[in-house]
Length: 174
Image 1 (tube, one colour):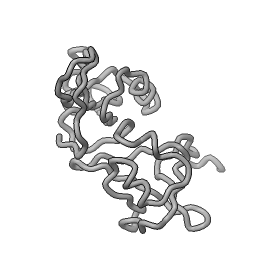
Image 2 (cartoon, helix red, strand yellow):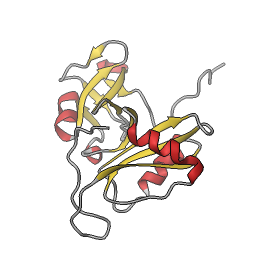
Image 3 (cartoon, helix red, strand yellow):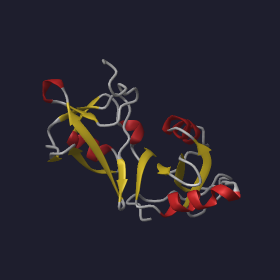
Image 4 (tube, helix red, strand yellow):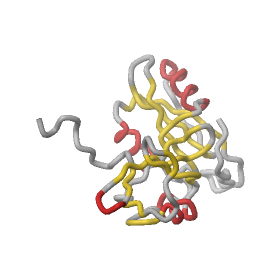
């Protein structure tokens, strides 16, 4: 897996060391559980992605760009390895994520973070001057070494991230 962000050089113990990609599978059953676990890490990883894994049961595995080490139960080791070597994921932690709050133009998102591009679902690249209402929740996709924020059109010519913190359940109004 190749990330387009620079690795950190400080280890959990405070000594200089090289960050590396590690896979972790703890059996999280939801993205929210995995996000919460990632948010509890100290020090925070440079990059953390979630990956939906089917075996040995459907769950969420995690890849981290970090200097830390993590244990995975032997039966979940293949899932952890798949997460570490995967080309696709959902980024939870990445450089600049804390600066992506409120309403920002696509250009500002690209300048403030390691997101490489912003796309409109089914329509291609978003115009650099278009405003994105982040909802203070940005989860770009990790695709082949790049972070790509997928958005959808919203009221007033704005965009919103495709993944929302509190999505409306499918068929909620039926």
